[in-house]
Image (cartoon, rainbow, N blue to C red; front, side):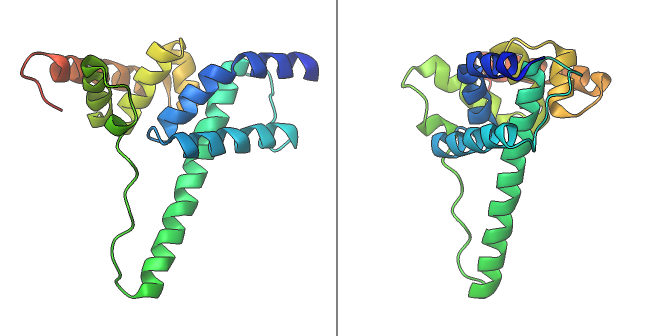
Length: 171
């Protein structure tokens, strides 16, 4: 694949990429923008190379997920060292919860709350399959897990989501 073709496909994937970055950053809009910018820089400067082993979408989403995890890890280490320096100061501030960032639509908030209550891998595989139109196999590639593991998280996530969204079900 030529560089121009890769660039065109990445450009077409930008809206979906931002949505995935938002999900990887627990719906923190500013953090998602930074993650996506860092991802694009990795692609431009060659730290992330497309090797034609998967689709461009699968590869790009994997780079976004990895970048978000790296940023979370760095932020956690900074907070930890600051806490040690302050000798037991107050706990670091938690990220803004997803419900504060979504539209006022009650059903949408219920879905976001239910998704947020799911374990990380279940939430990620459901997000990739339902919102980003990947297959479970492609989602496994993005997440860096085996196909069997992805299928298990997919099935369990769907079942828990149905329980949460049923009348009287609460996350």
